Image (cartoon, rainbow, N blue to C red):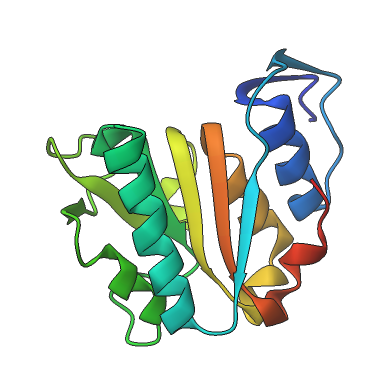
Length: 164
């Protein structure tokens, strides 16, 4: 069954998610206007950690978003030893509690673990070459964002080639 109306995302986010997931576009969107998704490409996870740290600083301090409005999702747990991007979370209180996060905490989890949920701002982090081949998972992650979507990917993932 395909959905004819996108009720969660802005048109820009919904169309981007559909391209990532290689699936068809809904006929209409409840929200037409909105920010374009942002893809930031890095050479390695250490560089990605810096991008994540700066992005969270901007969202929380400059844009004054409350932490509970933000979720950081990745294909692998942030505690995985290979998830070097997670060093970008070091300045911020985080929680793995997705449904009822404690006040003042940014939610952090896996894309698969957040399926069916949504957030005002979703940050997909840790997207590497193997993860970029899982189109359905990328679709799920990108489509969790209601108003703003940021994707932090390694250069070899090739996501910078997906035009917004």
